[in-house]
Amino acid sequence: MTSFPRTILITGASGALGQAVSAGLGGNGTNLVLIDRVLPQAPHGVLSLSADVTSDADMAHAAELTAKRFGHVDVFVHVAGGFEMGEPVHGLSRASWDRMMELNAWSFVNVAKHFVPLMRGQGGGRIVAVSAAAAAHGEAHKAAYAASKAALQRLVESMAAELRVDGFTVNSVAPTVLDTPANRAAMPHADRSRWIPLADAAAAIAFLVSDAGGAVSGQHVLLG
Image (cartoon, rainbow, N blue to C red; front, side, top):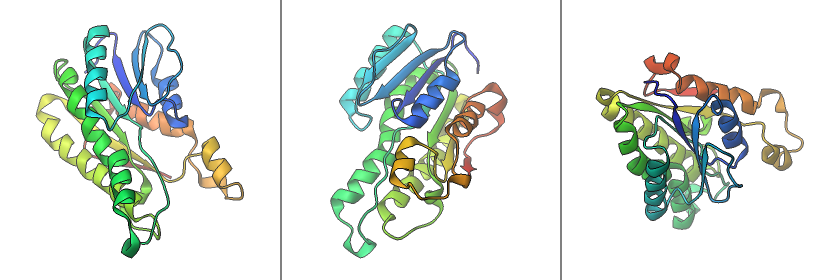
């Protein structure tokens, strides 16, 4: 799978996990394509794109710029997503449902639509999505979020089956609670002993996109 230099696409790149993944996968001549709604100016060798992962036009433009700059993509890490507490199922609003599905499931489809063709030209590649442990079961007031992450996992499994013959691996990592500044601020009194360090989550993703991770596909790696 390895091509030199590798080109790695990371969505949700300005968030805490996105930054940790970028730091872990960058360097050694790697080309990074970083996508988020707001991003700082990119250093040399990095294509930094302010774009909405749910927008077809934005992702088409991002793929066009990536193709012009680097010609191909080897790795796609989909960190972008969202979380919110919501109404009970019997009071769930269509707006809440659509928001979670757009951010956590459709965004993966939308980015893949435009970037998988740039990976196929390389004879395949590695795709990793960030799901959540919550995808495994429902919880009160998290119905739309849990359903959207479960949908993402089914998309990962389906894509893994569809692209296997083309040399792709497609997996997800499913953390419980990530140890981020935002989560610490939101849950100041929580027991953080079992929270997942960002470096550990980034390391799991790094393994899945490496040559050594080539035997793993269609799996959800539970972190926590």
